[in-house]
Image (cartoon, rainbow, N blue to C red; front, top):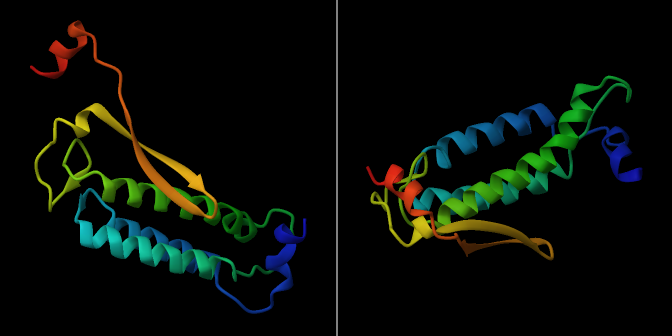
Length: 145
């Protein structure tokens, strides 16, 4: 309860709307459809900075029907999802579908057999890959046409 109420106790701090706008701009610019490893690495660093700043957000007004307070609660999850996307995109050194790595423009048959898996490792995020089951022949023919 104290953690949820903390933004009301701060009289100065980050504006949740500004932080949200910065997160959107960062993801669009560096983790959009066209990506590079360098941009993804920088985005991950900047996401960590945004996460630190999110710890200092403040909100005004009361608790009832307060969209700023709601946004503060959502920002934590948005930052987690953004980091998972950026780290997964950095790991996957190929272009496939809407994931286009300008520094790895071709699809890689080996990556086509794997999914990226994001897990928590203490306070850190860990990205690994998981081998997909074989695609049945009747479905494979639809994909390779």
